[in-house]
Length: 253
Image 1: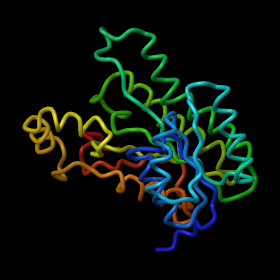
Image 2: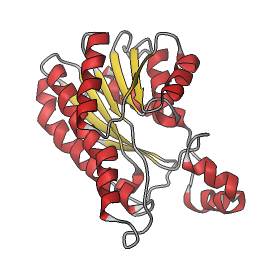
Image 3: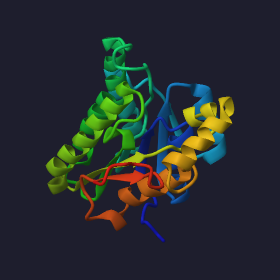
């Protein structure tokens, strides 16, 4: 299927590993002009070597407001404009609510949520009234239900709410905002791979018990959904956050 993404200008945060790298590769293979950002230069260079020499890389810590502004400015200098933003950067920290310092909740919100809000504001200001632009936010099935670490869950719940609110605000200006909520996704740099290596019996039992599809998801399966949502084929989808989880979520909405 031709998704009409050739020469579309795409920025993906957290694009050097795992899901982000798979998203970057999927857009790149569709002929889009792709830029990725991450904190580690070596990881960015490795992603470029794997995806293609025309991949643009931006070293940036998006937990810092000034750095986010510089990132958007650098992307616009390199590409002239922006058609698609994918807010993928994120991470998990802390333990239980009672054992986690409030500062950890602040850090999780800065990385997983506020960065997406700020980048979306700046990108949308450039996209507005140009027609057929898209923002895709990567949240989690645990944004709708309990399951992961509370700091992560809370920030991803905020992301889902933000996605709907911004979608309603911007669709009249030619910008569609949607989200993807992955379940348990296995990739070499992820927590699930680490847990599987440490205790394969426990993790295999988790998969059998918790994932009706009977296996972990792949980054490529998430990427395919992101690329579709950013394309013309999803022209009447706005404000949705779509589970990509093999039936893992217990939520019925």
